[in-house]
Image 1 (cartoon, helix red, strand yellow):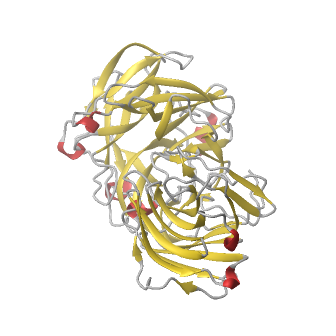
Image 2 (cartoon, one colour; image 1 turned 60 degrees about the vertical axis):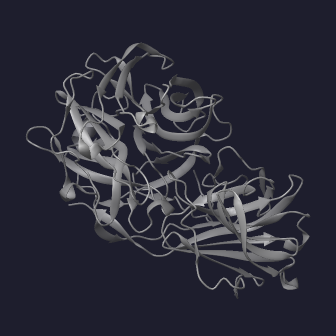
Image 3 (spheres, one colour; image 1 turned 90 degrees about the vertical axis):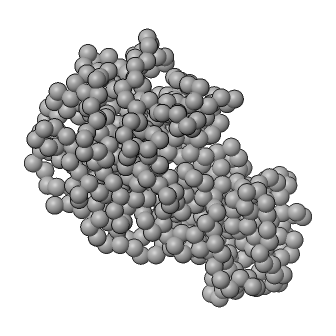
Length: 546
């Protein structure tokens, strides 16, 4: 996708160099270990890993190769559009080119869009994914396209057990028969979490026969769950890389383990040295990703929290390298932790002047409350909504310290009962915002659906035609707001707001904060924004590669 030169996406993502090849007999692999391409790569220089490779809130990353292009996707949870699609031909520059479900949600699902697994089989691209079934529980569904960029056609849910079914992964057994691997979500009801396998027909529309349990959480480090299985076939063994324990938040305990078997249906043996990948001072709670090789070098792309920003930025995509021991088990480098060698990196900033014909694909919204918007003549027009935080648009944040700004046009002429402005978004019921409306500026927070006004001031006459609003974040959860009537030359703080506001309450358990805009009021009201930008503090990224 050719990006507007004035627009630098916050997820103009950089990968130090990522080979996304899986091994021979997985249903998602291209190429195999015996192809000319992989042989040619066997003596290639080591990858210089710069983490995060997917900066921002990209949990459960999955990646595959189609022709000469690499494709990646990740959990979007309750942010729409659903499941990002990113591509790269050089494994260094990644473009966000669209989404699996950019407009309409699957007819059977309403929220919690988790763990997409992208798979190329022949001339078809499949996305195995988790979603909450309307009137039911979590289920594993599947979508298909003739091109990895889409459009995708949903094939519906494959399995949805009473306690929930999540984390679907396709795998072919030693007879080349296709199976779906998934987790029964027993931890949601204080039960164990079996990992199941069941035949999947070649049309990818229905499961066949009986399901077979492969393994479940049985050892102390796994806590109350195992999940997020990624399988490969190497030599005589199938290997299942999986996550265990608590995934999310400051108190997370996630780690990565591995089990192996000579037959897909078992018996499975867990590695006695599990967990094979754990936290360090820089990266916490690694888990749920995809194993791949580049020639004779092996890697796992998974998520982890930056310990400076944790849940406020979210679970970011990182790469960890491993080798194979003499007895055939994976041995992760860096003493079994995520790479932490420092390397300079340019901040991933965003500057959207609304010069494209449509909304940039990096904009997000609450998945059940898609706003009505239009982009024309360098302006973004947003139709207000009366409920929750109003009509909401947000962007990923990628660092703990950043500044977001926007210009609201004609604030003195906003329709009665309408407010609009800049905000830090957690979810529809948890917001921190500086808005203009009814002739004044208001700083307010919405926490668990209850609004509290923190400060207000009369809208000055000099700001009647346009006002620039600014949000500044520190450490991910401390926020300052200010405004300017002269296009950002001078800034005014809200009265009484001398200390940063604590936004620790903002992010839900499974996703990060978004910085963005909102318009709240009657649906007959439309507001106009002229620009939006995010500038991140220069940071030191984490790199490794010997």
